[in-house]
Length: 293
Image (cartoon, rainbow, N blue to C red; front, side):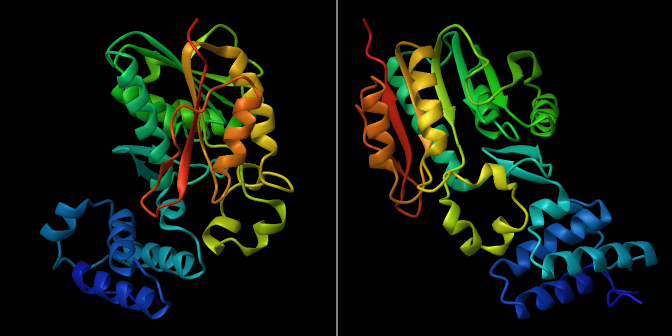
C-alpha cells in the first residue's frame, strides 16, 4: 500500500516534502508541490482549494510512483514532462535537454544586441542550431513579433518536440524546423543565429550531476575531448550565413568563452561585445558580429 493512502492532499504534500528533504533534496518543498499537482492534475490554486480532500487509491499509487522516481534521481521536469523557459511551458522528450535558467542568458544578450540594431518589431530572420525542445528559438519569437525562425536538429524526436512546443505556444506560423547538422541544411541570410551546443568535455561526463548524466541525452552534452567540437563546426557555417551586421550568439561552458571567441574571430566575425555572465557569474553567452558593408 502507498504511504500516501487515505491522506489529505495537504498531508500528502507535507509527507512527500519530508521524504525528499531527508534525501538532501535542496528543492524538496517545490518538488513536492509540483509532483502532487501533476499526480492529481491540479495547479497551485487547485491544491490549496482541495487541501483537505483525501487522495483516492489511484492518486496515492501515482504519487508513490512519482516519489520513487524523484528519490532515484530523476529530475522533476522529466517526471512531469515539461519545463518553463522564458515564461513558456515547454514539453520535453528523451531527445531534449531540460532547459536551464543559465540558457536564458543567450536570449537576454540576443535581444540586447537586436535592440541596438533597431526596433524589435522589424522583420528578422533567425536560426537556432541544435534547437532541442525549441526553447531559445521560441523564447526569441515570443519577443520578436515580426521574426521568422528556423530551428535545426539532427534528432527527429527533438524536432517533433520542438514543433509541438511551437504549436502549444502559438508560434507555429513563424517557426520552421529542419533536420540537419547545425546550419548545414540552411540557406539564405540570417540576422541572428543562436545555439546551445554540447560543450562538456568527454572525460567530464561521468562527473556530472546524476540528474544530467543519467537523464539528458548524451549527444546534447558531449562536446568532444576539449568540449569545443560543436563550435568548430557551427561557427564557420554560421559566419557564412549571417547577413552583414548580423550576430552569432552561443552558450559557453565554464572557462570556454575566450576560446569560442577566438574561433569566431578566425571565422571572420568580430567580438564586439564581452561575454554575458549568468547569475552564477560564469561567462555564459558569447557573441560574434559580421561587420556591415
